[in-house]
Each structure stands twice: as C-alpha cells, then as structure tokens.
Image 1 (cartoon, rainbow, N blue to C red):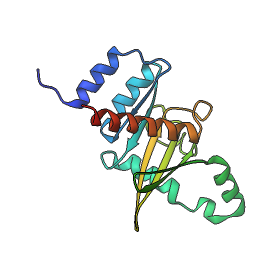
Image 2: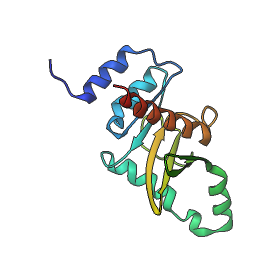
Image 3: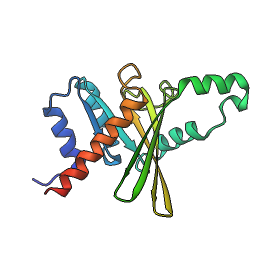
Length: 171
C-alpha cells in the first residue's frame, strides 16, 4: 500500500514508546497532528519551522525581530530576561562555523500550536576562506526551559543533523 511520509510518520509515532524521549525533525514534520501525537504519547518534540507553516513561521520571526514594548527600558529588560542564548564554534576542513541559538518562552501562551513551550532561532555563520554565509532557521519545541535550556536545545539540533550527515556518509 502506498502512503505519504506524513501518514507513515504518524503511524510510526503511534507504535513507538515516546515517554521521556525527544523527537527532533525537519520542517516536513512540522505538522499539528504529528506534534500532538508526540505530546499524547508523553514525549517532546523539537521541530524546524519553515514556509510549510506560514502563520507559525511569521509569529516566531516577529518575536525575534520585533521592538519589545516600543523600546521602553522596562520592556527591553523583560524581553532580555526571557531569552537565552548558546553558541558553538567549530573549526576544521578549512572552515569556521558558529551556531548561535536564541530561545524564548514569550510566545508560549500565544501560539496556536500543540504543546509549545519555547521557540528558537538558530543562526549559522560559516566562513570558508574569504566567503561568509549566514543561514537562519526557526524551531518550535514542547520542551519547557526546566528540561532544555538554550545550550541543550542547540545540542539536540546539532546531534540530530550530525547523526544524519554521518549516517549518509557511511551508506
């Protein structure tokens, strides 16, 4: 029987023991029912958000690019206190790569998304020789800050993509 990846993922999640586990995925898995299934099975998710969820992406982007409280000192202090940042710096193979993750709980009560506790922005700055590129990706997670601070979230994303990249090299 032919099926699409979304349905296959949903079926697989129903069969897995997710309690206490974190499902990390790319934007293809940023679907309400998939995230709800993870929550229903007592797991957590950390999923990339891209154009396939335009409303969610827009809300997260606005949070990271807005001027909090019109730039008032109180609003700026409150805004800064809610955010956490973690960075990694990797050197090797002729390149320098810095990843910086900023997380916030500011949207927790405002986003219409199953179980969301934090949103994140990851900026990856890569320098190879004289050429510098910057990529930004947003994430949504059901992990509360008490379970995953910015450094933990960055590590989860890094470990996920590292496992995929390394696995593909050894097929």
